[in-house]
Length: 358
Ligand code: PEP
Ligand code: MN
Image (cartoon, rainbow, N blue to C red; front, side, top):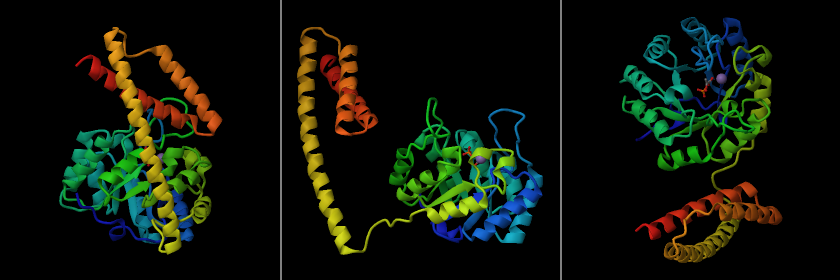
């Protein structure tokens, strides 16, 4: 797939590229007031507003529909913003095109459904209307890619992915866990595909937004989509995570913009030097891993000879406990070490299973 760079279809008003606007279009006044204040920041490339809101439970605010598209046309006229809305089916898409919406986005709850994505793509066939595809609510890269492919197959080359985090059943400080490795994998597969981060839906509250936004930029993401309402306290959806245009302006001003690489030879040399040390350490790690694998093979052979099962719960619990303690003592993240132990254990089981059951 060959995508058009973001700057060919979105005005680069400021760096980083910012998409902002309320979670939902609630009223003409709310849109005009928010848009006016956002315009004053001089930092917004695209104005967003949800016109149809996919809500988890019924009887919540579900958007104003077509009427709100008319308000957005006024916002565009008054402030010169390009406009983006979420579409979830063919009907939404037809209406958005009818009202001249500049950019469409497919929400996380729609990306999960290939039928819905396909009907949207079918309506867009031949229009080359820019489309942003949010990640599906769960961390399924194939499903995310599939939605992008369906849009691309309709002849659309102005596509961006939006990373909005992933549902997580359990305790986390985020509303949706970022799982940064997923967008990184997407970037590795399709380096030319622009990726925009939506720190609002990852955070779920206004305190976390700036650190998530900063991390997204540090990972090389191409822009940010941030929810903004002139008065978040009265917002009809996502009130906790919306920022006033003034707060948004401050947040953007405080972001540190780092370069992909440095032109200064001294900096480059220093980095090269440190990377050489990393190469040597990785080489040492490989050797240690190889030794570990050899012992695992010996253990596997021994267990086979003596008819002992591969998995030993007590031993596994002991490994987790002791390695966790060692990590604490050495000032290494316990979580990091636990993840490595899981991987080592998985591989150990795979090797022993191969040995014993071949
Ligand atoms: C939104 O952007 O307001 C929205 C509904 O997002 P998501 O699809 O990421 O939940
Ligand atoms: Mn929202």
